[in-house]
Image 1 (spheres, rainbow, N blue to C red):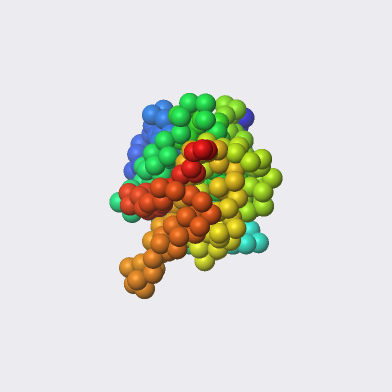
Image 2: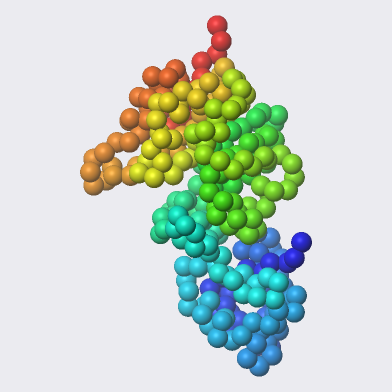
Length: 283
């Protein structure tokens, strides 16, 4: 596997201000490891021998909202222009993904890793349990659940998102270790193929309602109820879009639909901006 070296805007500024040799972390703070970059005149030499022009480093230093990486002798922005829009990794730590200007994680007052842990803590997957993660994104939820000993099946509809996850060092656990299975497809259709009572836990973190209303439907909730084992737990991220200005309570509608399909113990979890529920025990 070829080395990939990520350069944050602040790292680029350090290179510009540094001397002939600068030690930097180049894996987005995933580890504490550092690499040495040598400056030779108007070029910066990365550990694999790639020579990066001074002007490119200046451009990275000025682009505060993007991530760049060095690989295979070239410099690339961690972004994809696809048929359905523009996708990029944003230089939070760990990174979040932005699609058409909309960030997929909370980044105000909480970083994406803590946001993930808040969600996973609501259902607390345990050793040996099986978890369904309906909307993978960069896979932080699936990885966190697997770290707690669970086997995870995670679904992602968009191949561009999967491609960015393959680039992101914080997503590497999706594709290594064997405790996570990634399925590409629309969760609305994929879930129909699972057998009854297949999962101990479901973590449902869909795109906003305006982009994926079918994933907030009673029909879909009925499928989630079906695939959960008796006593199984559900966390559903909802957020609070429209609540501040339009007095709209999307969570209330979600809770009502969950109850209608049979879930019990339905309640809000404010720190995770979502709802938890449970499938009743048999008997």
